[in-house]
Image (cartoon, rainbow, N blue to C red; front, side, top):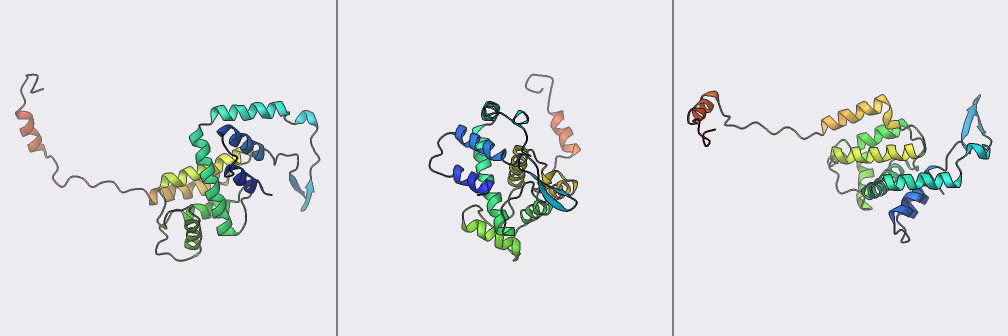
Length: 219
């Protein structure tokens, strides 16, 4: 079973009680794809590396200490946000591409994620709207309107955190994806409120100042 399937099952099972158990399991799953079983390509052929010797691996005590370090350094609100974002991006990737999340994720997937969440899909039928409707049907999305930029930024930040847990580079760090994020943020930023239709002009300000004297009340 894939990493995210097991992670989601653990997060949303009735046996979850404490944040410590959630984080311990999260770190354990995040460390499963170390170089012990990674595949490399040599002259176009896939090869599996040999297992590292024991002295090159983290001991159980080291892993327990790392888990405790993350537990003490991760606020409970962050853990809950990771759970929600993990469920959302996993469901979105499956609905949009028919595949589970990959590690590291492809740059085109990151660009598609930004594009699908940087526009109002209400009057735009197509693949992006179909995916959004599926997410609405399962309760992971509220409406077809464009999500708030802060919501998109939080989900991307969680996705990046999942890559860091696996010691992998995130596709959201590439210049092209970063530029797309900046454009999406600017395109969906709230417009500045208009200036007052009756501004205070210089003559009005001088008239107000003329009524003030050197007393405490005037100052």
